[in-house]
Image (cartoon, rainbow, N blue to C red):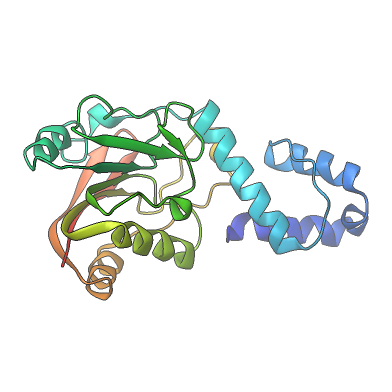
Length: 227
C-alpha cells in the first residue's frame, strides 16, 4: 500500500466527497493530482490507491526513468563478469527495466511490469519460472510501497531461487527521485537491520553487504545465498 497516495485521496474525498459518486470528475481529479490517466469506477479508497500506485509507477518507469547502471561500482556492470563466472544455467533479472544485461549475462531472462524491452511482462509476485533460478538479480526493483509489500517481493525472489543460488540486490534507503513524475512514488526506506533480519528469516546467508554511491545518492548493495 502506498501511504502517500492513500493519505492524499483521503484529503481529496474529505474536501470533495462527490468524487466518490462521480467517476468522470474523479478521473479528472486523479489526472490533475497524480499526473496519470485512470478511468475507473470508485469502489473503495484502498483499491483506488493501489490502482493509482501502479499507474504512477508505469508512467514513471516507462516514460521518464533512465538507468544509471554504469555509475555503480558494485551493483553495475561488474556483476556481468561475476555472474558469468558462476556458469549459471538460468538467470533472472527481476525488474530488468531496459534489460541491459541481456546478451551480456549467460542464459538470462528479463522480467519487468512496465518496460517493453523485457523478455516477459510481469509483476514481481506473478513471475514463476519453469524451474528455480541459479541467480536472481533485483537492482532497484524491490523498492516501492509499504514494508509488507517489500517483504512479500523479497520472499518471492528467494522462493524462486534454487538452494545455494545467489541473489543480487540494489536497494534505495528511501531517497526520493527528483523527477516530478516520481512525486507520488513511495520509496521504501531500506536499512541494514531490515536486510540482515530478513535474510535470517528467509534462510539466506549474507555474502556481501555495503553502501555505494550513484548519481541519485547512496544505495545498499547486498548479495544473499539461499541456504
